[in-house]
Image 1: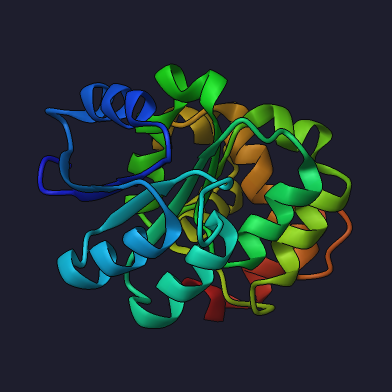
Image 2: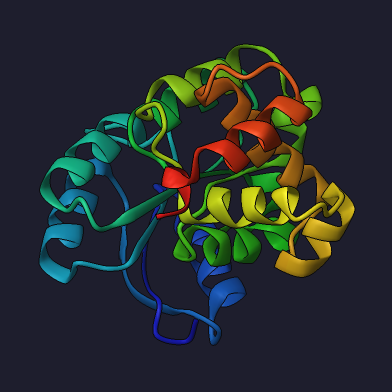
Length: 212
Protein backbone atom coordinates (compact mmCIF):
# COMPACT_ATOMS: atom_id res chain seq x y z
CA UNK A 1 0.00 0.00 0.00
CA UNK A 2 3.01 2.32 0.48
CA UNK A 3 3.05 3.00 -3.26
CA UNK A 4 -0.56 4.24 -3.31
CA UNK A 5 -0.53 7.88 -4.43
CA UNK A 6 -3.31 10.11 -3.11
CA UNK A 7 -4.64 13.60 -3.84
CA UNK A 8 -6.73 15.29 -1.14
CA UNK A 9 -9.38 17.95 -1.79
CA UNK A 10 -11.18 20.04 0.82
CA UNK A 11 -11.73 23.79 1.11
CA UNK A 12 -10.64 23.69 4.76
CA UNK A 13 -6.84 23.51 5.04
CA UNK A 14 -6.99 22.21 8.61
CA UNK A 15 -8.97 19.18 7.46
CA UNK A 16 -6.61 18.54 4.55
CA UNK A 17 -3.62 18.69 6.89
CA UNK A 18 -5.30 16.39 9.43
CA UNK A 19 -6.20 13.80 6.77
CA UNK A 20 -2.67 13.94 5.35
CA UNK A 21 -1.21 13.28 8.81
CA UNK A 22 -3.68 10.42 9.26
CA UNK A 23 -2.76 8.70 5.99
CA UNK A 24 0.99 9.12 5.97
CA UNK A 25 3.30 7.25 6.04
CA UNK A 26 1.16 4.27 4.94
CA UNK A 27 0.08 6.16 1.83
CA UNK A 28 1.77 8.90 -0.19
CA UNK A 29 -0.14 12.19 -0.40
CA UNK A 30 1.19 13.71 -3.63
CA UNK A 31 -1.08 16.76 -3.87
CA UNK A 32 -3.90 18.79 -2.35
CA UNK A 33 -6.64 21.06 -3.71
CA UNK A 34 -8.97 23.62 -2.15
CA UNK A 35 -11.70 23.65 -4.81
CA UNK A 36 -13.12 21.52 -7.60
CA UNK A 37 -11.34 23.27 -10.45
CA UNK A 38 -7.98 22.96 -8.74
CA UNK A 39 -8.68 19.31 -7.99
CA UNK A 40 -9.41 18.44 -11.62
CA UNK A 41 -6.22 20.18 -12.78
CA UNK A 42 -4.18 18.47 -10.06
CA UNK A 43 -5.53 15.02 -10.90
CA UNK A 44 -4.87 15.51 -14.62
CA UNK A 45 -1.33 16.61 -13.82
CA UNK A 46 -0.38 14.00 -11.22
CA UNK A 47 -2.59 11.00 -12.17
CA UNK A 48 -2.83 9.64 -8.61
CA UNK A 49 -4.24 6.25 -7.65
CA UNK A 50 -6.84 7.67 -5.27
CA UNK A 51 -8.66 10.98 -4.82
CA UNK A 52 -10.17 11.76 -1.41
CA UNK A 53 -12.54 14.72 -1.72
CA UNK A 54 -15.35 16.57 0.00
CA UNK A 55 -18.76 17.05 -1.60
CA UNK A 56 -19.17 20.72 -0.72
CA UNK A 57 -16.35 22.62 -2.44
CA UNK A 58 -16.14 26.02 -4.20
CA UNK A 59 -16.29 26.54 -7.97
CA UNK A 60 -17.03 22.91 -8.84
CA UNK A 61 -18.65 20.71 -6.19
CA UNK A 62 -17.34 17.27 -5.39
CA UNK A 63 -20.00 15.35 -7.31
CA UNK A 64 -19.33 17.24 -10.55
CA UNK A 65 -15.59 17.05 -9.98
CA UNK A 66 -15.95 13.28 -9.64
CA UNK A 67 -17.75 13.11 -13.00
CA UNK A 68 -14.92 15.09 -14.64
CA UNK A 69 -12.26 12.88 -13.08
CA UNK A 70 -13.96 9.64 -14.08
CA UNK A 71 -14.10 10.86 -17.70
CA UNK A 72 -10.58 12.25 -17.95
CA UNK A 73 -8.78 9.79 -15.64
CA UNK A 74 -10.90 6.60 -15.53
CA UNK A 75 -8.22 4.62 -13.66
CA UNK A 76 -8.29 7.02 -10.71
CA UNK A 77 -10.41 5.79 -7.79
CA UNK A 78 -12.56 8.32 -5.91
CA UNK A 79 -13.48 8.32 -2.22
CA UNK A 80 -15.76 10.98 -0.74
CA UNK A 81 -14.94 12.19 2.77
CA UNK A 82 -17.86 14.29 3.93
CA UNK A 83 -20.12 15.34 6.78
CA UNK A 84 -23.17 14.60 4.59
CA UNK A 85 -25.06 11.61 6.03
CA UNK A 86 -27.93 11.73 3.54
CA UNK A 87 -28.40 8.36 1.84
CA UNK A 88 -29.64 9.95 -1.38
CA UNK A 89 -26.45 12.02 -1.61
CA UNK A 90 -24.38 8.91 -1.00
CA UNK A 91 -26.24 7.14 -3.81
CA UNK A 92 -25.64 10.12 -6.10
CA UNK A 93 -21.94 9.98 -5.24
CA UNK A 94 -21.71 6.36 -6.35
CA UNK A 95 -23.68 7.09 -9.51
CA UNK A 96 -21.14 9.82 -10.23
CA UNK A 97 -18.44 7.17 -10.22
CA UNK A 98 -17.28 7.07 -6.61
CA UNK A 99 -15.67 3.97 -5.14
CA UNK A 100 -16.07 4.95 -1.51
CA UNK A 101 -18.08 7.18 0.84
CA UNK A 102 -16.75 7.90 4.33
CA UNK A 103 -18.15 10.28 6.94
CA UNK A 104 -15.64 12.72 8.40
CA UNK A 105 -16.77 11.71 11.88
CA UNK A 106 -15.55 8.18 11.06
CA UNK A 107 -12.37 9.13 9.19
CA UNK A 108 -9.97 8.11 11.94
CA UNK A 109 -11.34 4.56 12.07
CA UNK A 110 -12.55 4.02 8.49
CA UNK A 111 -10.62 6.05 5.90
CA UNK A 112 -7.54 3.83 5.75
CA UNK A 113 -9.76 0.74 5.50
CA UNK A 114 -11.74 2.40 2.71
CA UNK A 115 -8.57 3.15 0.75
CA UNK A 116 -7.30 -0.42 1.16
CA UNK A 117 -10.65 -1.81 0.01
CA UNK A 118 -10.85 0.48 -3.01
CA UNK A 119 -7.25 -0.29 -4.03
CA UNK A 120 -8.21 -4.00 -4.04
CA UNK A 121 -11.05 -3.24 -6.45
CA UNK A 122 -13.87 -3.09 -3.94
CA UNK A 123 -16.31 -0.45 -2.74
CA UNK A 124 -16.64 1.05 0.73
CA UNK A 125 -19.39 2.96 2.50
CA UNK A 126 -19.59 4.06 6.12
CA UNK A 127 -21.61 1.18 7.68
CA UNK A 128 -24.32 3.42 9.16
CA UNK A 129 -25.34 4.37 5.61
CA UNK A 130 -25.98 0.75 4.66
CA UNK A 131 -27.77 -0.34 7.83
CA UNK A 132 -30.12 -3.18 6.92
CA UNK A 133 -28.89 -3.14 3.30
CA UNK A 134 -32.19 -1.71 2.05
CA UNK A 135 -33.50 1.60 0.79
CA UNK A 136 -32.54 4.19 -1.74
CA UNK A 137 -28.80 4.13 -1.09
CA UNK A 138 -28.24 0.55 -2.21
CA UNK A 139 -30.70 0.94 -5.07
CA UNK A 140 -28.96 4.05 -6.36
CA UNK A 141 -25.57 2.44 -5.81
CA UNK A 142 -26.53 -0.53 -7.94
CA UNK A 143 -28.08 1.46 -10.77
CA UNK A 144 -24.73 2.88 -11.73
CA UNK A 145 -23.15 -0.53 -12.34
CA UNK A 146 -23.79 -2.94 -15.24
CA UNK A 147 -25.69 -6.12 -14.43
CA UNK A 148 -23.55 -9.23 -14.12
CA UNK A 149 -20.37 -7.14 -13.87
CA UNK A 150 -18.98 -8.11 -10.48
CA UNK A 151 -16.00 -6.40 -8.89
CA UNK A 152 -12.94 -8.36 -7.78
CA UNK A 153 -14.01 -8.05 -4.14
CA UNK A 154 -17.54 -9.27 -4.94
CA UNK A 155 -16.06 -12.30 -6.71
CA UNK A 156 -13.90 -13.05 -3.67
CA UNK A 157 -16.93 -12.84 -1.37
CA UNK A 158 -19.07 -14.94 -3.69
CA UNK A 159 -16.40 -17.62 -4.08
CA UNK A 160 -16.13 -18.04 -0.31
CA UNK A 161 -19.93 -18.16 0.06
CA UNK A 162 -20.07 -20.85 -2.63
CA UNK A 163 -17.47 -22.81 -0.66
CA UNK A 164 -19.85 -22.81 2.30
CA UNK A 165 -18.31 -20.14 4.50
CA UNK A 166 -20.53 -18.05 6.75
CA UNK A 167 -20.45 -14.25 6.40
CA UNK A 168 -18.40 -14.05 9.60
CA UNK A 169 -15.90 -16.57 8.21
CA UNK A 170 -15.73 -14.65 4.90
CA UNK A 171 -15.02 -11.49 6.87
CA UNK A 172 -12.17 -13.20 8.72
CA UNK A 173 -10.63 -14.60 5.52
CA UNK A 174 -10.78 -11.26 3.67
CA UNK A 175 -9.95 -9.16 6.76
CA UNK A 176 -13.09 -7.03 6.45
CA UNK A 177 -16.12 -6.57 8.71
CA UNK A 178 -19.15 -8.90 8.53
CA UNK A 179 -21.25 -5.83 7.69
CA UNK A 180 -19.05 -5.17 4.65
CA UNK A 181 -19.51 -8.78 3.57
CA UNK A 182 -23.27 -8.35 3.92
CA UNK A 183 -23.10 -5.15 1.89
CA UNK A 184 -21.33 -6.97 -0.96
CA UNK A 185 -23.69 -9.95 -0.77
CA UNK A 186 -26.88 -7.92 -0.90
CA UNK A 187 -25.42 -5.68 -3.59
CA UNK A 188 -24.81 -8.76 -5.75
CA UNK A 189 -28.32 -10.03 -5.06
CA UNK A 190 -29.83 -6.74 -6.25
CA UNK A 191 -27.47 -6.55 -9.21
CA UNK A 192 -28.34 -10.08 -10.32
CA UNK A 193 -32.03 -9.76 -9.38
CA UNK A 194 -31.77 -12.64 -6.92
CA UNK A 195 -34.04 -12.86 -3.90
CA UNK A 196 -32.18 -15.02 -1.37
CA UNK A 197 -28.74 -16.15 -0.27
CA UNK A 198 -29.50 -19.72 -1.36
CA UNK A 199 -30.45 -18.52 -4.86
CA UNK A 200 -27.22 -16.50 -5.04
CA UNK A 201 -25.12 -19.57 -4.26
CA UNK A 202 -27.13 -21.68 -6.71
CA UNK A 203 -26.64 -19.06 -9.43
CA UNK A 204 -22.91 -18.91 -8.79
CA UNK A 205 -22.60 -22.69 -8.85
CA UNK A 206 -24.53 -23.03 -12.11
CA UNK A 207 -23.01 -20.01 -13.87
CA UNK A 208 -19.23 -19.96 -13.57
CA UNK A 209 -18.81 -17.06 -16.02
CA UNK A 210 -18.80 -14.62 -13.07
CA UNK A 211 -15.52 -16.10 -11.87
CA UNK A 212 -13.56 -15.24 -15.02
